[in-house]
Amino acid sequence: MQTIKFKSTEEETSFFDEIKKNVSDYFAESNTSSLANTEMIVKITFWILFWAVSLIGVIVFKDYFFIAFLLGTAHMLSHAMIAFNFVHDANHDAVFKSKQANNILAHFIELLGVNRKIWLVAHNQEHHTFINIHKHDSNIEGYGLLRLCPEDKWFRHHKFQWLYAPFVYGLGGLNFATIKDFKLISHYSKKEKLDVTFRFLLEFIFFRAVYLTYL
Image 1 (cartoon, rainbow, N blue to C red):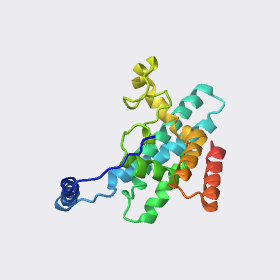
Image 2: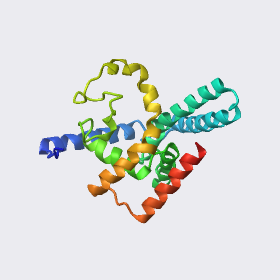
Image 3: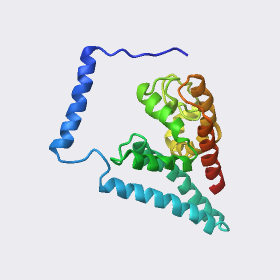
Image 4: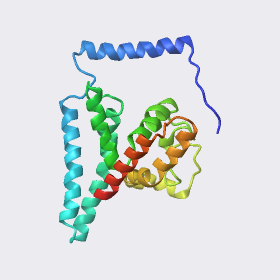
């Protein structure tokens, strides 16, 4: 795989600094916070409750297949909504002022079958450095089911991915829990991007056991 490096010019650096200043000035002039507002707190509360109620509903209606199936589908999709709607922001320390509070909320990703430390490398480091660059951004790995960049091989079923993609995303947690996290542990440890210590392995096993147990 080709090594990709970026070297910014002085003009590009000054442009980036100007963008950051404009964003900072916007929040200051509009007297608003860049952190979570009331709507965000409501959204976080809603999706946590949706996640919990849909899971309980599957258990309560386990003897009624179609009801349980619909509730299970809703619960599956809630995993994707939680990841995209607030766990992402918490892992960027963008929800609360307190880093510890963000850290606690960010650990909700563990209940979706995704390891937080691997997420931080895969998303915060790789994705934001190599956005949508083939074989460097793991976020656009479609496993042949989805075609997320022009360099991916095209298959006939891809013309229907606009229909089935939401359900594939709903299985994203299952992918991390069974394949992707293990693959990335090996990949990142070899690249020295992840320190696979005894504590890391202990936390990884504990949270994965919790995830598999409740599901």
